[in-house]
Length: 290
Image (cartoon, rainbow, N blue to C red; front, side, top):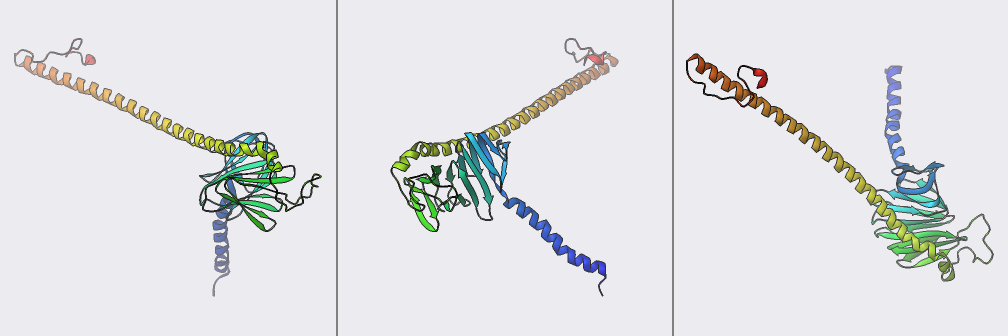
């Protein structure tokens, strides 16, 4: 019959194993991305600094500035001025809950899925394409524009693909009343509304490209720092080698003088002329000068 202690161990081992395996997986799944660059932006009220890691549940606020978020090694999201958003991380995708403002995104081909959600409307890049686009909230409307690739808008179950160079405007359901004259929710319009958003949208692509440039500049700076560190280490090693070589030369020179002086001593004892002439300032009788 098994003892009570052995039974307890057999019972606890699977539980402990599950905890050990499960905790890292849960912690890793909560990571959304990292900050490639920012200006006048905060997360949870704290100033947003480069290389800060963002987690599921974090809330971002951009005032008169910008925030560039790296999702993995290739995709970028740029949040413009007066933007408020939060992040959710599921096992398969990152969701950005946009409360106000605008977000521009560069989604690399076949990279992890990302979704921008405003009320009951969501926007996702189609997989298999490099996508560059913008999602802008303006006077109760949501303007979605595609610059490269293709974006898919899910408007309360109705799927609409926005091809390269196209824009659509939708009106997400909201608890807040819409301004007078706004079309009802679900109506897609273009023309005047898009012209009203033109200045915001026009800066979106530039913002993403600037964000990518910021990220690449950061990587270049890291590479430069690494190269500088390597160069400093190499210089230090070269200096040490030079010192060692100098010390070895000094020892070799002293050994040569000692050998010559020994020959002179032997010649003098035999009554012969000294065969070795030491360097100027060096005396065989004074080893301190060697």
